[in-house]
Amino acid sequence: MSALSNFFHNVISEMRKVSWPTRKELVTYTVTVIITVILFAVFFMVIDFGIEQLIKLVI
Image (cartoon, rainbow, N blue to C red):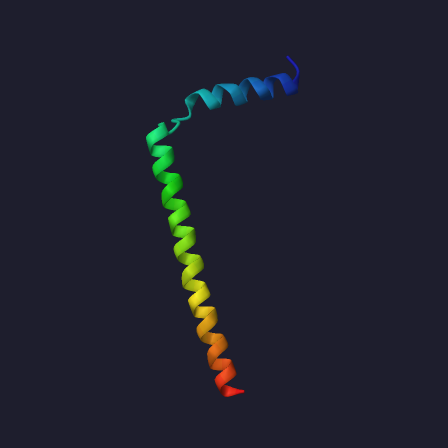
């Protein structure tokens, strides 16, 4: 067996051992990530706006 063939055989073997999430779990995790990213974006936007206003006040 060639090294490349052996590699892909091992990859397939390991992929069968993976515990894949259910559709419901996948949707839940995806929504959680999207909401978290949006919240962090808004947070940093507010911080950036505040710092910008402070700099304008000083200058």
